[in-house]
Image (cartoon, rainbow, N blue to C red; front, side, top):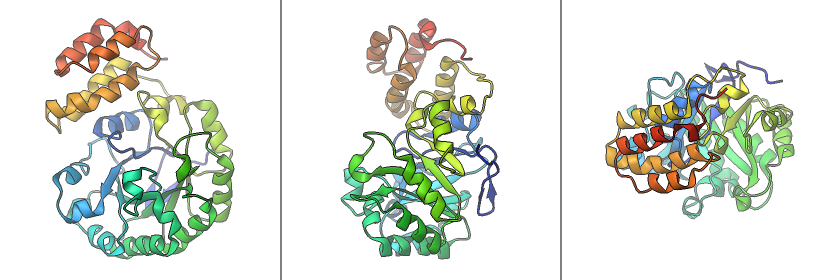
Length: 318
């Protein structure tokens, strides 16, 4: 049974459910829907500290938030402690309640620069980054990492995070070399939870009530959901046994609406294609609809297509 009201520094959660940061995926629309359905907060896409330092517009776009976010969390990545210490003081981060540091991303373009999960091979540098952030701001600092890079050093890394001043940690129990293959090893989460006193958030393979309950057996303080929410933001309501008050079509329309309030239509229609394919996953006779969605260039035409085939989206979910 999950103990509610997890505290991350001075921030108190209610449901102890979190939407994971996913590059080019955890956008404002998905975050809005996840929180609507019961997530306490949604972590931003990875934000480069160097991009912030050198004023990259695309990087700053990732700092946009939605009014539904009562707890705002930004995830930063990089490998220079001094840049982290400088950036956490930026006024653009003032609106965020928690700053998370990515030390788990397995993407080749990230690790080749020494960022993400590559930091798990250099504990002194990783510790310096966390300490720099803790010294640079009074906001809670959290860290997301994996079981290890090529070998499991999750417990050692977790202890280091705690010693460096992290207020909470998130563990995804796969090695970097495993990416997302195979099955997440929940025993690693259990070991990490037993090794530290700060809150531990478990991440990996939670896609339904059964896998959620398996995650809870590790003793985690909260559960982070990533791929399980793709096209399925209502998963948070399902886990909380809450009513699902939107149809799939209504979710899609709201997703579009939130994005259009912040970005131009050309960007939104292209960006949303992958989300639509996820929303359609498992729908009967969806192959032709998916093909058309990838070719349509106007949002109103996508909506018309989906309205015409609304029965394919299951109607109102129970």
